[in-house]
Image 1 (cartoon, rainbow, N blue to C red):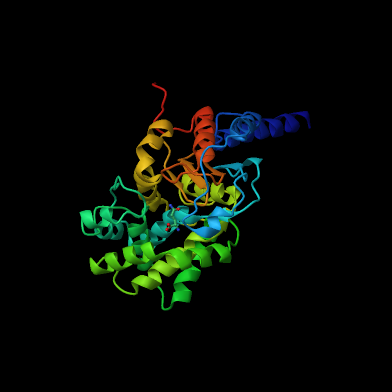
Image 2: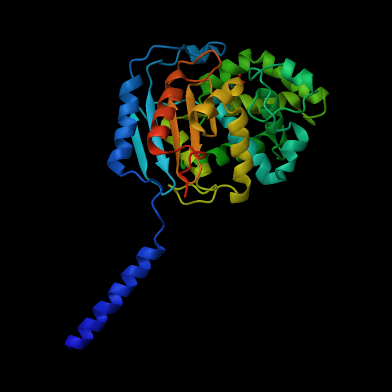
Length: 341
Ligand code: GLN
């Protein structure tokens, strides 16, 4: 009996060792309390910062509460950390461009993007017509309006409704919940988006948008009006950080092999003409929107997002840039920063 017990314990011990060896290393070197403290510190540091102003070229955005401020971080092992207001929603705006580009790559491959709008930074503002004219609508990217509206036009479907359902469904899988449209924002932008309509017609004239340029502009406007909070955005970012698998729901949302190309364009153009400054500071592929959100991806580690509407001159949330940089740098999020062996 004694002998049997000892053997059994020996087996259990061996099993425990084997299981430990098989266990995946945690996403972060820091303890949960340390991660939490990093978020809380960044939240407190910038809470009372009054720099920047809400976007007002879309009238509904000017009315959003400028004091909304929330930080969320989701690790690739599905742990969620938050500070501040992570339930107030803003419109996703340009952050949507990432996920529509991803959808096009999923359906048509990475070459479809390089062949059509290209993958180079324009060095111009996001709705620049000069950027279109420079290379007749090529040599740009899907993170600025001409490339983004073209990407939307490339999503296939038998009807507008079918295309829209695909886009919204895809975003929702990244967020891990069913997202909806802020109708007030959609209506407000649809009434005032003549410049984007002009950009759509130009991209049509240059052969990048094949048909229905104004439908593409309208669907693009609707995708920009999808309502999200900081936690949604962080989960979307974490899905990209985790090779296209949503770490909270466990669903493989996009092909792992297609993620690097999406992150590459975010790195070069995600914060428009300030993308270089951002990458220099953080090393993180990221994307901002004029609704006040920014999400950033630390590949293999975490997704992080901040919602705070006041923007700087380039159209990027002031608080979001500062808070994400602080948290990521505290957690070793910069993928270029490695320790020598
Ligand atoms: N819907 C906005 C536009 O097209 C998105 C711009 C942005 O977030 N930078 O102007």
